[in-house]
Image (tube, rainbow, N blue to C red; front, side, top):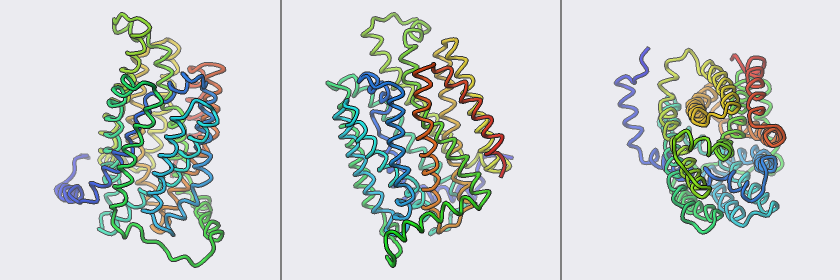
Length: 426
């Protein structure tokens, strides 16, 4: 079966991409992903003498606040207005960047993690629900994986460009902490952009009951997840995959820190300690840019890949196994100290993650009711946050006490077992 679009699809895709709101969706993701600190965040913390276990705790604190406020925020999006909620999320993000800028005091960093977690809780699920709302209004919901994959590709373009600018900023700012202040600028732009979204995206149910009853009502989404087998497996699969990826994705930074000398020798580049630091900054920025450029292509083509496989759930399960095998390869490459191949495997991990994500959204869109979208998508992030709360400190502890290769080895075995026993199948 060909994965190229037919003539009818081509015309629909042209119409979709000409719509003004579609361009707003694209640029929303683009500016949101201009996180200039991302390629160097772990290195900044390590330079502030924050170890991997403490970094894992910061991630857990961030996800704890996402966990606590996720379901209530989904309820607020459904009953108070998605657009309003999305504006609030950017206020929380900006506050978090101010706190990170004021580090390295660990309590201050905890405050930054708390506000970032609040921003994630108020953002996650909400914008996807707005995209689905627009698609349904225009009768194109069947193309949801194409729309989401396309808008997500612009998010990844933003990440790639952000990585290039990050190199320039880190090499020229007086202190690395200033990278957090620079990140505030695109978030202000995104705040203004969201304010121009159409008013129907801020439609909400009139308040008839107390906030407490609204809060209790939001947990009906959890009941649906427990009782609906397809929805339960899909949510658990997406949440587990995302939780592992997000807990592990930035470990390329300490890995490159460890192996920068080996890498420079492999590339036949002589260097002093100062030059090693320069090359580390340059290489990490370029690595992240490459990760996101290639990932944007995979995300944009998820719709066509989905047409090739027998079902979205089958594709999700298969990619989960591939992820586990890649993690196993990383363990071996870390053991034998081969940084070039480590980078290549990490690249593939990013590619398949951004291929899988739109496929997962497509599956969930098929098995949930339209009036439950924001709440169910928020429940997904709630589950993911709970997984990260457990895994991020655990990963940091294992990496700090034992080694990175031990972490990757045991994680690969865990992923294979959990996919076989719990997540596989519809």
